[in-house]
Image (cartoon, rainbow, N blue to C red; front, side):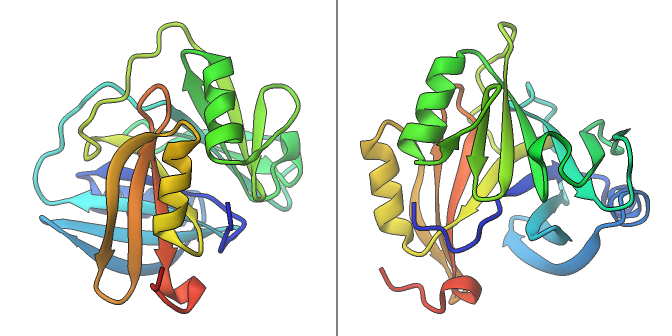
Length: 227
């Protein structure tokens, strides 16, 4: 893929706005960026983490507690740490603050539970054209994905707006072409390309377990939404 940014982002959904902001800003130490209005009573509170963005999607209406997605743990590199510190946010999402370079993580890492390692590798390295690393890892720009075989994994629900980590985002230059290419190489359709005003054109694709990936062309990064 033709990346517009060498860092994946990750999004979670919550009903606990103030508790989540206190945790991610004060305990984890992330810098707030801005709020985006997604419609339907959902506000996206964006936070910086080593070039990646944590998208805290706060929903006004109660969110369903569905089976978790395969995105199980977020690792954030931090200078000055000599050993990992394992934390959980107010909704129980796992996050580790790790020394820079720990397990290859210089920005962020994401642990993904999968039902079939070979199928997951074919998706991330084949359909998405990222690089396979050692020990069941995938290198997506400077983001490290840790694939973990879990025979108890349930298919990720079709309803994306539910509590917990629910999707990742890759920033690219041309949404439509990348979306078509991913599907042609074996990715599953999640949602066709659409445009939000003058800011973003995006789509969704899904992995073999149904995990959601947003394919985002953001004018702030690409300068245009033309295809």
